[in-house]
Length: 112
Image 1 (cartoon, helix red, strand yellow):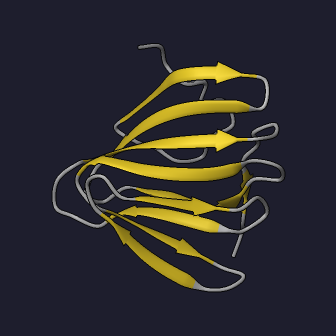
Image 2: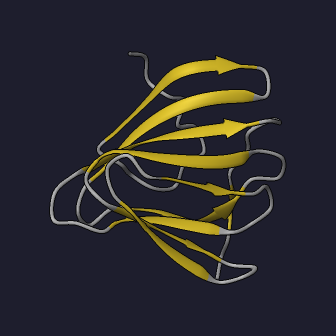
């Protein structure tokens, strides 16, 4: 498993790994601790599809506002341009895959 390039990231997670990458698509695995979050952001072109392997996460979205709780085996997709935040919703580490595509992946942080 190779490390996922974290250049420009302004948040910490327990672990990141890239399982597959090709132009316009990648599969990343993330592990976040009980107090960790992936802060508010959006992607210009790429959709995020979350798949939970272990633990529980909450995905908060804007435009429109929504909160989704995901447990093992559940998935949820966030369309390109839609702001979202991911938090660990449990008291142990959560592990999830993020399928990102189609389109170039970027990370546009939100300040509010």
